[in-house]
Length: 68
Image (cartoon, rainbow, N blue to C red; front, side, top):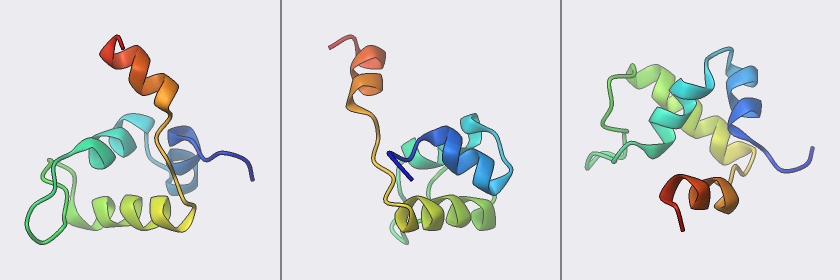
């Protein structure tokens, strides 16, 4: 598999890319769990899969979002 994308993670988990993005971009609480309105179990599944597949955010997409 090439570079892993948000779409890849979402498809593997059967969730939306928006959900995956919200989990990955949410600030972390002291216990490492994302501080968002996604269930703890689902958030942990997203984080586990992202780690296992070595997901890395796209610097190009981040640049487009930030305008830099």
